Image (tube, rainbow, N blue to C red; front, side):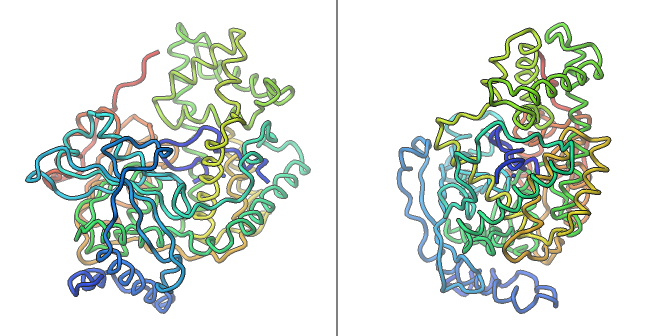
Amino acid sequence: MGAHLRDNRPKSRLVALSSAGALVTATLIAGAMSAPAASADSRHGRDREAVGAEIAAARAAKAGIDWRDCPADWGLEKPIQCGWVSVPLDYSKPDGKQIELAVDRIGNTGTPKERQGALLYNPGGPGGSGLRFPRRVTTKSAVWANVAKAYDFVGFDPRGVGHSAPISCIDPQEFVKAPKADPVPDTEADKTAQRKLAREYAEGCAERSGTMLPHMTTPNTARDLDVIRAALGERKLNYLGVSYGTYLGAVYGTLFPGHLRRMVVDSVVNPSKRNIWYQANLDQDVAFESRWKDWQDWVAANDAAFHLGTTRAAVQAKWLELRATAKKHPLGGVVGPAELISFFQSAPYYDSSWVPVASVFSKYVAGDTQALIDAAAPDMADKAGNAGAENSNAVYTAVECADAKWPTSWSRWDRDNTRLHRDHPFMTWANAWMNLPCATWPAKQQTPVEVGTHRGLPQVLIVQSTRDAATPYAGAVELHKRFKGSRLITERDAGSHGVTGLVNPCINDRVDAYLLGGKLDSADVTCAPHATPKP
């Protein structure tokens, strides 16, 4: 979604668009065939894709994965191993063009007897790489230590991402160039300029990555997930998805219910067809405003540390003053309002950013402008990082634009975002410009999958905080309704995006019990919030 649904996103990404142009054996085949029949209106195409997915999974099961030490420049230390899985670009043509997906793994830390298979992970985005997931073992993450005894941790770059046939829409150095135009328009001319940039960005995606665009969908990534499962030699998938990774999991569970063993989804995208993706982004703007205010209340309560004001209103006044200053004269010539939003939005996103963001803001108000420039300005010398940020943005745009039909009428975009901005100004226009390429998208836009329960679907564990900004709480409630027998763990009065990685025994113990023993509470559970950050 507009604020890039993942748990380790690059800071410079959100408002970039404001001037960016955001089976071989019968058993395996029978298992793949357990996917439900497609709806009548798209049965022919979907049936061909289902058969294509079976064929690709059969090949992958036979081929396996040739595990090797990871390339030195991937930043993945031993004993993590890397490999490749081949998938069709177009599942309706399984013998056509193939693309290679990068995968990595680390073996379970317990005994062979304790091993329960592979746990696959997706961090969200769309556009996020999962390759760092095995590092939770090498860096000895305490939260995941018990699960690591039982499972190999497996990550992958989804199609179009990173090392998996990466796509691009604009020159990376151009993409990060700053300062960008203020996302909040003052005049009709400002809106016209942003519309032109969005159209040019969409055209750039077609020019640089046109053959990939029609196939950059969540259902195709779900099919890829099933091919990876087969390549790993796993009869059933164990899956952990965060943020957009929850929608990927919801679609996988709908298309391949009989191939799923256990699934944890954390910080949930509302999977309703009506929500994907235009409405999802509007809802996000409202939730970000609420969490932004939570952060300001916390800053005001800790005025002794930050000296930014003793009330939310006082903190907001300093934010508006900073914004106005940077609009008139970009800090260091490179940090304007767009760059400020990119930096400050990490506070409503993650509690782990509350102290760092407030500290930099505090230094600025005390006269240290350089700290804010260092934190918010793009690093033009970091060519690899900039290429990664551009690729991430390209995949985000390509998937959201391809998954669903978007409004093409500018008057609707203008009306909806003007109305929302009045009461939710922090993110609304930045989010709108980031998604606007979808209004003039140069490739076919699909109809979203009707997420729901089909024969064979196991019980799914859903985890969500009530004040999440990026994926509002209603999404978890909706998926809970659609996946019969699922359990919902609610973290009340909390809003950090990505709950399962935080220290909260009420949640951590239940995730362990489910992944290790398949145990769920007899009813939904509400947990007290994790510890609030301290300055």
